[in-house]
Length: 259
Image (cartoon, rainbow, N blue to C red):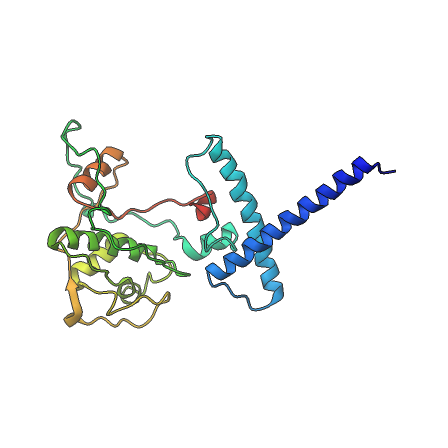
């Protein structure tokens, strides 16, 4: 037998659950609209919605840890929130890649840990970094990382910021394309061939025929340095004295929801 108080509590619980469901559904609709998500049928959409809910719970649980000081970063809804961790890994992440040949590794230069480095360096504020780009559903992060580093060096040398073509690397290094790639192979390609601007050779989120045209090349590089040293001071030193660096990150766990 329910008392009036119990009925009140039950009605509150039902209302709360309905409100929460509505909120999740509303966030789902906003997610689809913001990221232009379309699914081939209702079955697929229901599957993606349930994955979205799982990711939403993971995001909320993680951010509670962040608020308690138990994590150093926040998570949020993004274009990957309708994918499982395995789907994200398979689509966007590269397999473990080998380091460059031994004879490519530069000698580990000695440096003075007390040398006078600036307290702060922000190459974005200096105008040396192009806008944030989106690789889409193509494992071409390697190409974006490479062009970003070259774009910054071009600015440092000329004072002009241009956006270079990731698609040229994706198309003209077909062994890599959307399946991940080697930084040093991309740099070698640029040394030999140069890069065209993105406006001339725009990004297409897929591998196509190489449309390289030497007459449209706007820059090339003479050399590059590579370091395997696990040393934060060394990285700080390179960024301060040389410019932005192309890095590889080992992505695990909830990184696909990083905010």
